[in-house]
Image (cartoon, rainbow, N blue to C red):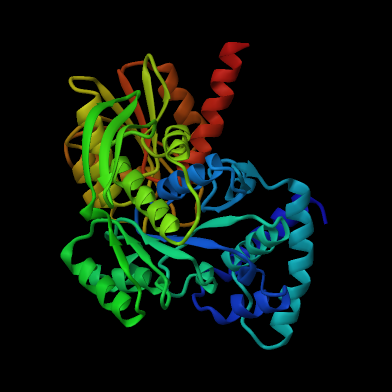
Amino acid sequence: MDYREALKYIESVGKFGMNFGLKRIERICELLGNPQERLKVIHVAGTNGKGSTVTFVSNILIEEGYRVGIYTSPHLERFTERIKINNEEISEEDVAGLIEEIKEIINTVVVEGYEHPTEFEIVTACALKYFAEKKVDFVVLEVGLGGRLDATNVVNPLLSIITSISYDHTNILGDTIEKIAYEKAGIIKRNRPLVLYPQVEEAQSVIEKRAEEMNSKIYYVKDAEWDVKEDTVKGIVFDVKIKNRIYKDLRIRMINRYQVKNAVTALMAIEVLRDLGYSVSDKAIYEGLEKSVWSGRFEIYKEDPYIVLDGGHNVQGITELIYGLNKYFINKRIKMVFGVLKDKDYIKMVDELTKVCDDFITVTPESLRALKAEDLKEVIEERGKRAVAFDNMKEAVEFTINNKDYDVLVFCGSLYMIGDVRRILNSIFKKEEE
């Protein structure tokens, strides 16, 4: 099996859709020799901020000299982005080899009477086996969806992190913050510490109840004290006092206000690791934070004019995007290229976006769950704003880039879309440079 065949097999499994539960992944891991039991895992759940927090934590550990496995989803441009060691993507050859081995195990599992494993379960099993084979020191593991029944929850981590919780995937996780928090809190393990991002009261009470049941000590990020000293499109500088340690002039390149909280969440996790006996220097903290980048999250892709890529795909994400636009681009003409999945609360997202932008290009993301560009265009025009619809992403990007009637161009609404946009922009600007 080569890499192309491996990807074709993974995509073919997508027809089985989402099927939550741990029985299948537990059996797959058992047949693989339980690789998860040989890993020191930092498990990260939440609605927004998971990827950024994973990036901050992993880069600090890498700067300390540890060998760090990193598992995130979805990918933006390449499947291999999902599985990395010290920020180096898994090779195509390793993907092919792992999938070939796991395909045989999947056949065994199905013969044994289990329902067919999902795409995410298979990829998660690949990652766990890969990290175990490569003998990494830590794995920073991002939950796919929810937590309690997510395939990544087969691990027993050193510590868990729960980032910001808000409404998303309500058809799966529940239609209240309490129900969503209950699913996220499912990653809390007995006698293992939890780092908790500041939450609304409804979410916090659910998480605290679960932590108490599991005898899990909570380290509250809200107990830290931070002060932002500089906040521009070039980066953020801040001081923080955390567990009686004071850090002055910490710098991060990932911008917008929520990234400071994500960075402090990562710092709290590092302090917990120190409490557990792992060595992490202040130097590694400063350098790891400053070197951290996470594509597609209020990413300044280009300047003059500014191009911003943001994968915000729920109401909270869009609210934070708008905060950043208002902060960094006062009195600028903003044009928005917007694509969204139809199972999102796109009506509220449009209500917010039309407060800061008059001109829209609507697009249809590459997903079976995509909302059609024409349907999105109608919603925007109903609010008195201008919109042009494109079903073809390449045509939409080229049209917008060639009509420079803006100071700031924003692509947003779906991570599926942002990956496609990045590929197209890379191709356009590479040709210009040539």
